[in-house]
Image (tube, rainbow, N blue to C red; front, top):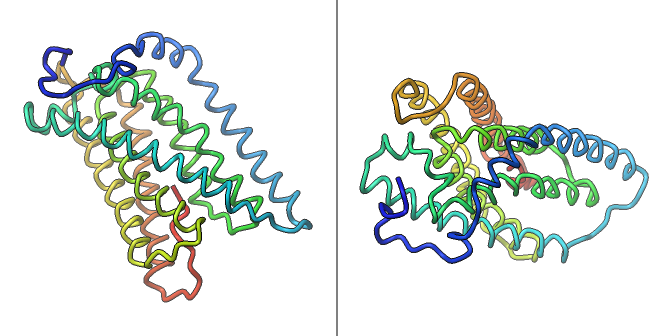
Length: 268
């Protein structure tokens, strides 16, 4: 799908000027640095927990509000821009094209947001810094999710395979809700418990849809216009399946077992 096929979608100047070819070259040369980021992250997280063990927890309420609010605004804008593009593809070319079309990485409306999405997985590791310094409970799902989504996002962008549009648009959308919730909680706003349940439910649905998209990519990837490869589908399916199990377990433990402690939904 080229620029003339985007019809009524209006791109902004900074989106149109973004050089996606240079971005792709950088990721193809440097994507393996994601392993270094994740190794550093793990060392800092668990080293930080050890450091804070005998020290008083920090408040950090204001920085946390600003941090969560900035990520919420970024995610909302990303969800709107990528969502409009995906709706346009769905309405004009159908569902199969929305799965197989890898022009999401190069279309004037979305090319910047695809790049920004993948890059954002590195600074999002900072979520865990607040948990460690505030001495909150750090669950396996939280740090496992941060590490694997960073690795898979960078790995996928360098190959620009089919399914990426769904992967990024869903994640932007869920993060819009999630970081807005975190910002409100950090600001002292009493958010009704059902809102947290809605966020976790949307995360579970994201994983179900992610698995379905991976299955369709596998079915169609041998066709001319559905580019992918078995390794990406296998790793992506394993990642989504593990998330589905972990998020479903989190939902059960947090909302269905009658736990009196509000664990929130600090997982993604």
